[in-house]
Length: 161
Image (cartoon, rainbow, N blue to C red):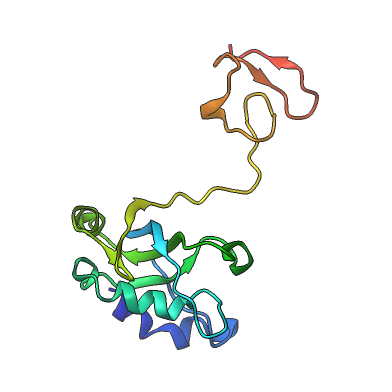
């Protein structure tokens, strides 16, 4: 499917520039790898996304699942100073969901170290509850009564009935 889409990239995305391409809106899996050792280059910087991708290419569980977003450190290199391990995120094409199950069942080693594997849930930097309109939480974690609805404009109570 991805190969079929990519053959039309030059037609569909010409107005948007040469780096534009098609990407699926379903059938992909965001992965969070924990406790990944941080190999350093000659300058002492953490290894590049290309090196991370080469290491992931060694994983047989991923051999039939194309990587859609190259792996990268979850924090910037300035946060990796003095650290030996960090977390990596990447996305791969998994239309059936079996790829994640297979990956989770396998033992994934990176740079000689077994890493933890979980799905990655990207969250907005700032969240706001749509029940009480307070910041830093969503409605699922709101401590206010479920039948309470406050107006986003005046903050007044409104009844659901």
